[in-house]
Length: 160
Ligand SMILES: [Zn+2]
Image (cartoon, rainbow, N blue to C red; front, side, top):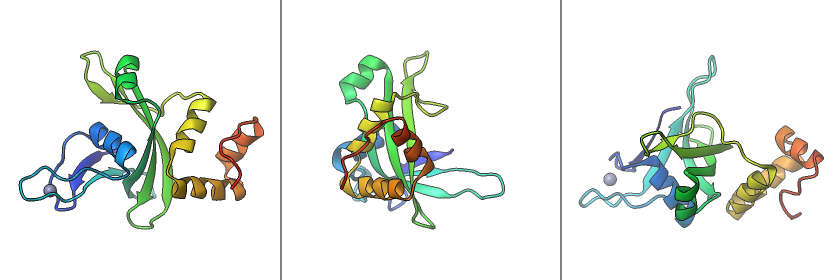
């Protein structure tokens, strides 16, 4: 799952976690800091699926469970990413997190974050309206994950 942050002009643009936090707060990436550039910074991820290729995604929205001080205190920074496939334009949701490693640096979690049901509901509820609408549409189409969550009595979202 290689991932990186770069501006529209192709300049590498720092740390993924900081860009994710910026997207969570501002709805899009920061401006590139290279002199005379200022292009929008994008957060890109690729996933390799055997026999299915290696699609690339742009992180288009980030819902964050904690703010910076809470994440520092917990040494855990769980988020929910909405990704758009750069080729098909399909949207995907990805639970994601950083944690402090033994040397005290933020490190990408290697497996999906362990979330309570209320944590997951809070993250989905924090997504911007257009993405929540897509999740609701998925629920109407009986998305297996959402159906399971709803079957155990989770009220993720208000009815539209
Ligand atoms: Zn740039």
